[in-house]
Image (cartoon, rainbow, N blue to C red; front, side, top):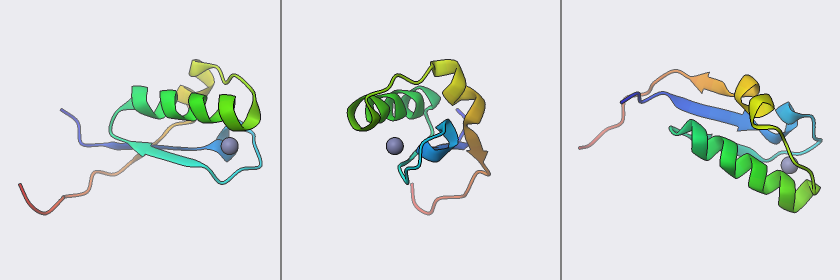
Length: 65
Ligand SMILES: [Zn+2]
């Protein structure tokens, strides 16, 4: 399992919007942003477009467990 955190901003997909999604799960990032675009911008964003723009953040050590 990779602990890499994925992040995408709605602005990266071309909208003037501050919405941000962060998850370890790429599918979740894609899904959440698409839901948001549909609801807020009434637009479909291609999955490929989102995957291209996803930013992978350096892994951080989490305390605990
Ligand atoms: Zn947005």
